[in-house]
Amino acid sequence: MSRVYIDGEAGTTGLQILERLTARTDIELLRIDDARRKDPAARAECLNAADFVILCLPDDAAREAVAMITNPAVRVIDASTAHRVADGWVFGMPEMAADQRETIAQAKRVTNPGCYSTGAIALLRPLVSAGLVPASWPVSFNAVSGYSGGGKGMIAEFEDTSRADHSAQPYRIYGMGLTHKHIPEMTAYIGLENEPIFTPAVGRYRQGMIVEAPLPLWAMPGKPTLGAVREALQSFYAGQRFVSVASAQECAEIGNLDPEGLNGTNELKLFVFGNEERGQARLVALLDNLGKGASGQSVQCLNIMMGIDESTGL
Image (cartoon, rainbow, N blue to C red; front, side, top):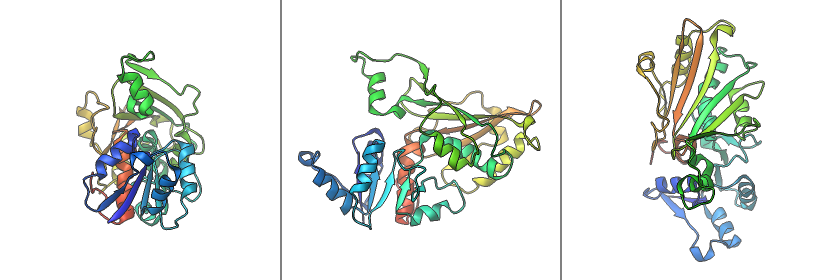
């Protein structure tokens, strides 16, 4: 039985991870009594007694937690942004490369991808690797997420009608300064030479997200077709448990796409829409920002590190 400590279990991601692990008989969850919850010694004790620590904390607190771990046997999964492009940390996206699972399985320090970057990397890394999209291409991503992506503060803003700052907005854009914290990992793990333009938005619904990448295929070297793009993605993700690529027929039959369509799952589904005659593609990733975009992917990585079926509990 593996001992697991979730540091930050009361947060949005932590609660979802706790829910996925509580009923499992192969895991002993280490938890701090309410009376000692603010005791640094109690936290340090759990951080060093666990076989696996999952950090669901703000960036600075995550760095502090890692510094508190003195037991060399403790293995860490960090769900924050703190270590996503840091030396010595393995990027926790098992489907990213052929050898990524094995790298995760052997790692002491794993950094969980961001929700937006999970969709972005899944869409474009295979195409850059295959040479269909040049690494120097000026890439852009558009995305919308449910308000749970903003954590407890944003959830309360949208759900608590008694608050002075209660929001009834149906939709809003943010990150207008183009400095979103997921951009560095998108750039690094897609393999881009330049940072993408990323335009995120929040909708008035709790969870679920869509990430899009528009591509002018007509302007690219070799002028790849929609079919070539779809085939590259299907080949890259063939046999994957949690990532699938919609067929040409399915894409043709879809009139609209619901960002809540994969809520409650660890699934990630990719779509290739577009206009062949005009040489235009609209690549779309659909996922649950609290599932494959956060807690589900953390549990998937935990399973891989434990050496068990990666779908356990998912």
